[in-house]
Image 1 (tube, rainbow, N blue to C red):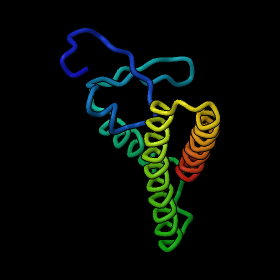
Image 2: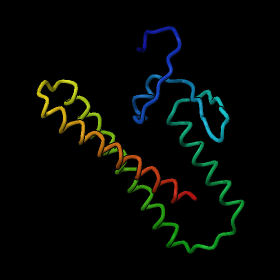
Image 3: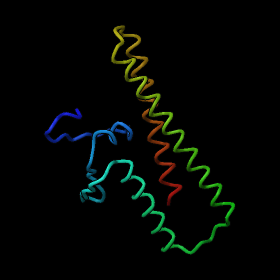
Image 4: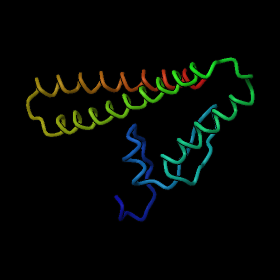
Length: 131
């Protein structure tokens, strides 16, 4: 893929995979598309930092320092959980790829669906924390 000179449209939950292959992010939100000419990891950092800046300006600080630290720890914990789940998902998808037995394939498909669901819930929790 790295040697391909054309355009690829990639959709993935795996930020590390995307980061190694992309130099542009098409961000779709509220029926509009914005193009960011940066790696996925840089886009995520700038997006969350701009959200944090917006929240800081729009809401007066009501929380105590201890609550902010707890929230940051919880956010880091969720981010670590997402990373571990993404690693687990990659391993499961590889096992699914090389599996030949129907019963094993079904079990792996169920596990993949479960892990994807956990990842989605974790992202929702992360977004709720940033609100």
